[in-house]
Image (cartoon, rainbow, N blue to C red; front, side, top):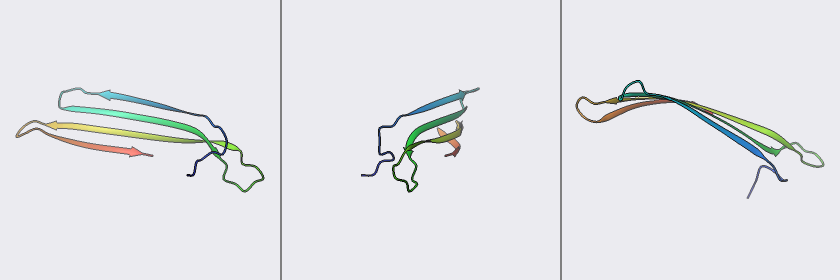
Length: 81
């Protein structure tokens, strides 16, 4: 098994979401996540030391429920990361 750190490490993660639903048929949410953890440098050295690695993710989700003629939901999602 391969791990990203050869020594005890620490890290943290934040997650936030804002949701807006002006009607029953339409809703939008925006989600952001930031994750930081310590990993090996990956450089050829006598001893590996840990450096912080940060990953950011963003998502925008649109949802529109079509009621006429059935119960169908149209969704679109854009994300990075």
